[in-house]
Length: 95
Image 1 (cartoon, rainbow, N blue to C red):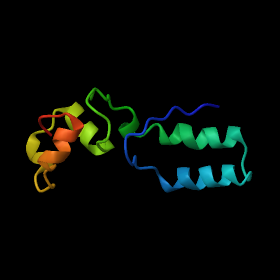
Image 2 (image 1 turned 180 degrees about the vertical axis):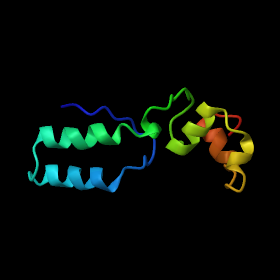
Image 3 (image 1 turned 90 degrees about the vertical axis):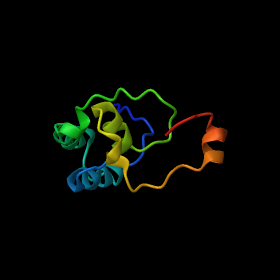
Image 4 (image 1 turned 30 degrees about the vertical axis):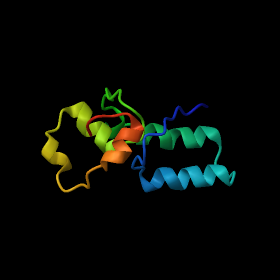
């Protein structure tokens, strides 16, 4: 069984799935049993949303979700601004 992953920040995982992953790592359940937990978790709408963000890596999954959904910029209100020198080093002109 292959599980495709991408480093997009912390993706919320249901406790039953993290418990199953731990059980699998401890060889308490087999691959077939683990697959059932993964299949159930993947029914969550969070995993069926499109991800159309194509910018530089490094932002969290919630930011990618918001950008893909076209959420208004006020969604990010209250978050700290990225310092100018960091944006310059990253080669970007806006957040």
